[in-house]
Image (tube, rainbow, N blue to C red):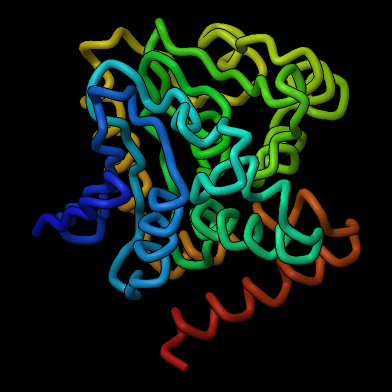
Amino acid sequence: MTAVDTDGWVRTSREGAVLTVTLDRPDQLNAQTPATWAALKAVGDSLDDGVRVVVVRGEGRSFSAGLDRSLFSGDPATAGGLGQLGSMPAELAQERIREYQAGFRWLRSPGIVSVAAVQGHAIGAGAQLALACDLRVMTENASLRLPEATLGLVPDLTGTSTLAELVGYGRAMEVCVTGRPVTAAEALTWGVANAVVPAGELDAAVATLVAALTAPPVGAVRETAALVRSAVRNTPEAQDAAERAAQARRLAELAGR
């Protein structure tokens, strides 16, 4: 089954427990707009309990080159543009950005593991979409870049927290402030990429990873994913308690209670 959002250029298809979300604007290198983020949020809102893995892809030669150029207009009349946001009262601008962030944050929802399949450029919003996923498979020619600071802006689509979790304070600071690209080789060394493969092997590598993610019992995967996510923020004591509670639930299920 395939569904297409023609306004946001987002296409979805599902095969069993695996949902694939594709940015489908290859002629514009999958540049994103507020309609894209609304479409992504709608996908997250529509998830059902049968989905175990979400794969995020970009059609064509690049994952996503970031914001559509039209959004850089300083004209307050440009819908969704930076000028329009800048002309709003701070509270309203923040609420609008919060809505945009919701198109990214759901990729770490309870019950799913998300995988970004990244080829070519992943810039700005594109990099943050890849970072929003739990795991990333990148092609050898791929790179991630967060250039917002060099444009007088900040990464605001959940990118700072997800990057810092992955690479630590120092590297995240350097990448976010300088805006330099992170190559696939660096991403692999830093733990941002789980695998780096030739461009022609991306589909096969993602399929292999998805098969491994869906092989264990669903309950065990969901509990384990929740524990790994909480581990980066919990105190050791809180995490120990979370592990105990999760294991008790798994044992009770296995015992038929």
